[in-house]
Length: 236
Image (tube, rainbow, N blue to C red):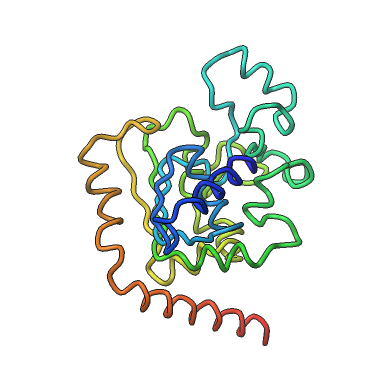
């Protein structure tokens, strides 16, 4: 996954049309790549990020229908040759996840030593849109698309984003985005990435219209909020 983030960052940096910033729509795994770009690089910056069926909180089931592939993956889900090992999470064993996760635990700021730049860069987004499929048979649990997951120690019991430790701690800026009205959640009745044209128009493209209106003012307001929050935490 980190190689994909680096490749995307290099492609963006090489495109002069994107130097002032851009909007990004990521589908499935690509949505996780885009979010990692925002946290780790974001230069040039993403203004509006739309994640469609992205495994933002990880997966707890092999996402491929091919039995032989899942058999290989299952031998060591945290360290297989497949990219989705980078965002595998077994909610039955939190300690093992934090110790063995080779990518997701860092990107989601789930370890004790957190990277504060991840939260600050995510909180700089003008808009973060999370789209989930109500009948998703690929992404398990489905709540992962909106930063939810299984409850630790209770696989099968979903915990929605606003009830997670990551949200309460504002580990990657979700709470900041939510409280400032810049976090949007949408669902459609269908399977993984099986949305219709109407939903694409009204559930996704509506968030990308009028993007450049008063961008400077939006950036100034967001930066002021971030610095105020940093000062508050520093004085606590």
